[in-house]
Image 1 (cartoon, rainbow, N blue to C red):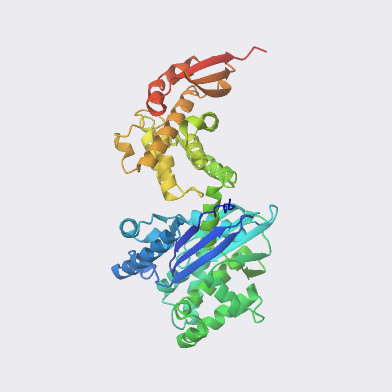
Image 2 (cartoon, helix red, strand yellow):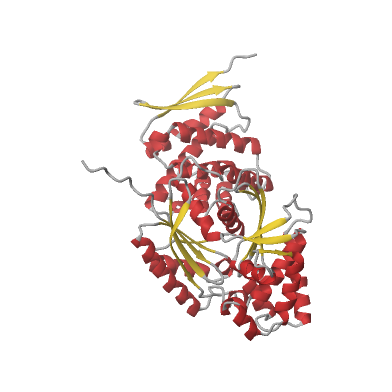
Length: 508
């Protein structure tokens, strides 16, 4: 019999809707986890053109974007690729962004995510630092058309993420810097950059490497011009000289030296890079040829691998930090999260949800009560709003929506399909929300006193139903009374009877 060839891993596709250009990369992971590029495209259609001056994406630009994304979508379908499409600062700031996203979905079938600045920084960090040795400290700078991202990391895991309202297109539009820049203009631009840096970055930063990694095309162009030896590295002194030279250079000479689209914004990019480098107190900037698209691909790769979830801890940390800002009951939140995750793990054969949604339950459990900061009576609805509009690096917009809905249903109305709060979900999303919310409701009821009386427990799924064996350190009458109210909802969702068996800890 002929030997059956092993199935190839699926093709991954990253689409980056930036301010200057739209990019597509198709890649396939090899046996070692490295990504082999299959196809790349870049269309310099300037999605951000005019957005920072008017606040709206013009119709002509929107049509160019839609046409490009329809073509990219067809390529992805041809390769049967798993796609993640991300839009950054231009669509973050365009007032008509929701309409553009809707049209993209209707005309191309792509779910275009308008990611936060911190999520953009996280993805860039992941792309640049993929497979970096665990103990290595790194400092990363990425200058886009509308924003600049700065990150510090250990290994490939970021520990600080900042997104600055500085970008090469934005600065060029605000200061009309596409032509020769006067001495006065340059002084004002530098002053503006320092002001934004001072408002966004902390005064005292952690111990930083002396050399920063620069990941964008703008940084590549500036450093290449600054480095006389074409070494891919430029000192701060060289960057300052480059700013002076480019500012005085006539526009036609710049267009001969750089790509025409890049030439119009290169002065602003150089001013931003110089300003960030000086503010951070580093010695030089070294170019790397990886960035946001690579990060999207790595993120897709990790989502496939149930055993590789590098951002779970950082995501939980971000949720706890958010909860602390809203003065949540941290002991209760951690207890509910622990109970909910135990239910998820012990009842995997019953709920049949993918491991990739486990972090959704963890974040929803940690943040389920933050609505108390607004109003106790309707706190579940306020919780939904706060999570929906939160900046939680590691969660895409749609994922954050699902987390918010799970948290919203931790009390009061159960997550029935006909309930108004379930509107707008796909059938698969609705099933996920119903199951996770039901587990959360049970977990929350088991710490109703907020005194953590349950030391540990185990859930078993038997022929007669699901049994929770509770090991308690003190009486749990209040918990059991509330948990009994969740039995009917649990049975509707999972088709199983739920029972509770208390094992009181012996007095010491």
